[in-house]
Length: 285
Ligand code: PRP
Ligand code: ZN
Image 1 (cartoon, helix red, strand yellow):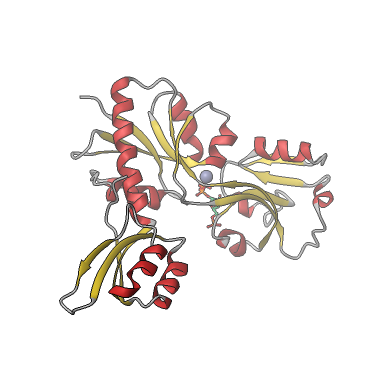
Image 2 (cartoon, rainbow, N blue to C red):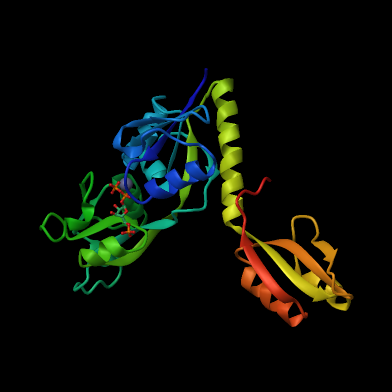
């Protein structure tokens, strides 16, 4: 029996959301994060829980076949992994942050400063591009406390909600790179593992699409149906069914989260009534 080994972050920004994705994809796992490895009885998958910064190397070495990590971590690692799919969640940025009382007045402020980071390669490239000479102080974790303990003047780190910065008295002053979660794979997977990965990706895409879409039902007088249908994109075209009430129909369709509010307003203006919006469990693309 072939199994695909996928590495997930043990704790941090990506851990909960990657775990949810796997559960929603119908893959149930044994004992979870207290152990390093979890198995599934419903899908040929093993999950390795690791520090996110270590995941690229584990995948490159073939200890894991795939992983879910931030693009930032992938870029810093410089391993030539395949980006199988951009997952669109855990969006964050890599930024320079300074103690909030500092009068930061642009990049030249960084000259001669000590910058603590877990992303020295990305930082070095950024500083070189901007012709700033500063001292890069590599730290493996807890970068945000470096200024307070006198180890550095500022930091270069991941900012997601920004709460880590706030609770450490820091403010974000330069955004260097945007990032989101990506599914990566080792180069040269066997055909068997590739087939499992494809199947896994198919499930993940269905879960993500369902999250980004809503099922919508509404009632409309028949003479408004044309206008209402024009406002609705739908997967193919909306479903229209007659109501028991003469001259009225029920219209069903699927709307993406982004276009949702705009379209709801158009529908109301066109005469739609009794609009219901329902979450979608899975959406097969
Ligand atoms: C990153 C970063 C911060 C935190 C920022 O940690 O190092 O600690 O996320 O998130 P926030 O803006 O929402 O507070 P990560 O999840 O990569 O864990 P690690 O530092 O242990 O690798
Ligand atoms: Zn990290």
